[in-house]
Amino acid sequence: MLTAGPALAGDPAITEMQPWRRDLGDPIDDAPYGLPSPFESDVVRRRVEWLTPDAYTAINFTPLHELDGIITPNGLCFQRSHAGAAQVDPAKYRLMINGLVDRPLVFTLQDLLRFPRENRTYFLECAANSGMEWRGVQMDGVQFTHGMIHNVEYTGVPLRYLLDEAGVKAAGKWLLAEGSDAAAMSRSIPLEKALEDCLVAFKMNGEALRPEQGYPVRLVVPGWEGNMWVKWLRRIEVGDKPWHHREESSKYSDLMADGRTRRFTWEMDAKSVITSPSPQAPVLHGKGPLVVSGLAWSGRGSIPQVDITLDGGINWVKARLSGPSFDKSLHRFYYEFDWDGRPLLLQSRAHDSTGYVQPTKDALRKLRGVNSNYHNNGIQTWHLKSDGRVENVEVS
Amino acid sequence: MSRFPSLLAALCFALPVTAEPLGLGRVAEPDEIAAWDIDVRPDGLGLPAGSGSVMQGEEVFIEKCAVCHGDFAEGVGRYPALAGGLGTLQDERPMRTIGSFWPFLSTAYDFINRAMTVGYGEPASDDEIYAILAYLLYSNDLVDEDFVLSRENFTSIHLPNEGGFYMDDRAQTELPLFTHDACMSDCKTDVEITARVPNSQ
Image 1 (cartoon, rainbow over the protein chains, first blue to last red):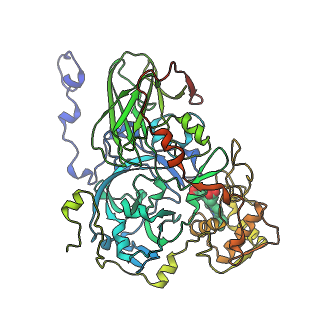
Image 2 (image 1 turned 30 degrees about the horizontal axis):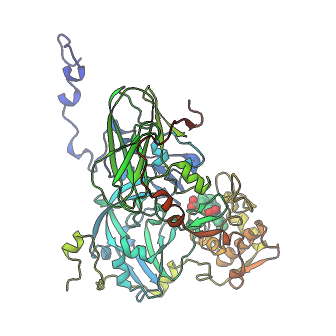
Image 3 (image 1 turned 180 degrees about the horizontal axis):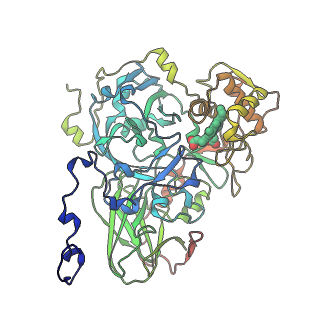
């Protein structure tokens, strides 16, 4: 008890004086770079150790079940590196453009800041997102089934401006984007895509890129698989053919049931998932008003409609979209209803602006088999039980 | 004329149709390009001069690579195997290695040089990389033990799965199937749970 005298009836959170009401708070200098409340210490990226050999070629997952709106906070954007997160000195940062160009060029970071800039919001989804679910349900939470995604407002220079500066020769049809880390990540990108909407970005959500996201400069390849968004970007080479490098043949290629393999599967198909309730976000309040919240996105455009089912796909209703609707960006949806406490089979289904409707996992397996590792955009089912717990299931 | 996109164009999200160069950046020196332009293509573009034999490769591989990839390139722990798996691509558990899956040998030259002679790996000369590749071809039963790989014979080597890759065809095989009006009510008669997370109740 903080005060002497008779205990008052009612909620002690109200009737008793709390320390934050009684005492001065933290001094303003305590956190020159602000941090989340200590009560939010569970809201972190998490790694699944068995997925990769070690902690340098590794991936962790965005805690989607704890987030709302469409923007992913910088410190929670999932990270994937193939040789650790490089710490690049911006004073020694150089971007080279060479190959089939009139003038091979070198830019410093300061040079890049003198080009006209654009601000655009895009999702970045790893091609392997939901890949562990190809053979059946495996991961116990939306962070792990769908957390290889983030959505960020980038500030950057259209790659097109830099290519114009170097002058692409007529024979130039492909680009090789290359990183400066110990993996020197390299991917072939068709020139049309670079001219259409790629950015050479130096800011994420208003501040400098985080080291694990490619500081000081990364490539932004809107709507296409995350591996192509080369981090710590050091070089763009213009060529007349693709390079068929390791990350577009050994990896990031899709093995079909017939033993043949799709290559250059760049676009991310339309997809959605309910982020709450979900296994890590059970319903703790019992029956009554319940908010279903989730995310939808498409690598081919925007999301005009998301449908929700409570009965595993017998009947569907339209969810409510809230927040900005940008091309190739996450969209936030909600569905509010009165839960009677019965078990539910929750699913969401995205429609994108091309008319594509998110398929079931079984429909994808019928076409691709279960060994393609990548590009699993099938409908996710959550089983909400009467006690409010949620499990990852598949349904007939 | 302004060199910058007009405010209106920026608002409309359009980029200038013909941008005039701003004169930013500087010309890259030949030595600078040589230092960074390390990529190798299937047609041999980018391959340096050099050669190496299976025997030499075995020695280098055991010294520099085997701690993670195994003496016979079979993989150690969760580090990847680089040999084996031929004929498994339609199996329930396919094994994807340089021998069984990769379409081009140039990919292996490029990757080993860019990522396995720094970071995880150790410095290796051009001759040593040719030798390692000769040894990896041998470990995959694709050449005899007296084989020597060089820039000259490089593009005559074809990996078994070169023809197994094809360009993304989702636009023909999937988009038409999944572009349709969606059923909103009475879409099926009953629903059952068919799979759960292993070890959960």
